[in-house]
Length: 452
Image 1 (cartoon, rainbow, N blue to C red):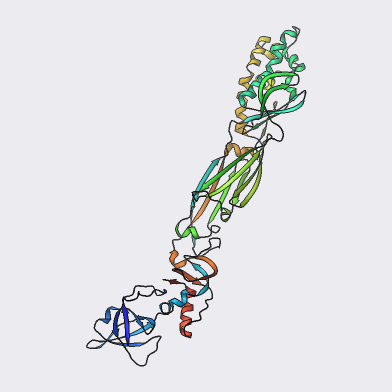
Image 2 (cartoon, rainbow, N blue to C red; image 1 turned 45 degrees about the horizontal axis):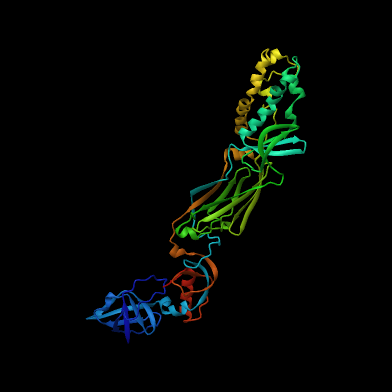
């Protein structure tokens, strides 16, 4: 009988076979007793001992230890390579693929790769576009009802300066000489037209108009904000995939935690598998969209791709009660001053001294404003004050460096085995070969093998 011998470098669990025409042809005799699965072989050729693989009568065999008889005669026992012999049948077969290194579904939880306690952390942020200096929403009562104006700090100080100073500066000459500043403020108190004052960390620009407090034109220009006014901001946070190599094919849930911090709303957990949005660079994207109104209310959504991750709401406005925050004249400039106190005790005995203090009310107000920012308000504003940006944080457990070629990734569906790669089959169906050959192929498929 004629056979072809080879020096074969292959894995035992592989369908790899030598290329046609690459073998060493020689004669071989079968020594009885023998079987086709494990033939006893006799070679009368001094060159055969350098080979480890054989093709004989349509089957491939591994060669074992060489034995010597006499002269140029050598013996060996072949061990049939069922994967190589039935390679064409295997590749033409469809099986339920449990794991593979070329077919995978990274949404399937995979516990094949154990993780360590080592954590990799990545932190990304995006500005919400808000201004820490903020602006003020002031409700002012006038002849046409209450209007709400948005103004920056300088305009707010200008308005307060007018409301405190105007009665004394412009009416002083029309008041009888014995009138005191206390009486002027008692009977001509423009602060009574201020319905509310609120600080917000953004600016709303409506139509500009002069502020009228009661019947008084203040000469101060601010933005009129209607109740239906909304400002929208869209803030994407993009980041490259933090998994690489075989880790990129692992399901994210067992190994990774993700959180999103939204200023004024709090911290939210994110399911990494729901982060499906990408940009043109292939980076993952989480998009936060918010609507804010003149009252400081915030409504928002967080999305990625087609997935709505969650909705949230928050409140960023800080109420500023004028008296409680020391912005009224009495508590800011002279806390001892009261309606019943005399000019002498309240203003050092001189109306001029009182006017001087009153004219400096702008500086007094500015000295109070930083306290508002530092202390914050009740509720969610304090979060915004400390952390004004969006933050995405990811914690990824380090995966032990197992070889992906050998262990593959979950697939769990029917597929043909016609691609080169690693496969692990669940409940293989083998309809070729004899009983022993079938059992051997099934064992290889269940344990994992390579199509090469």
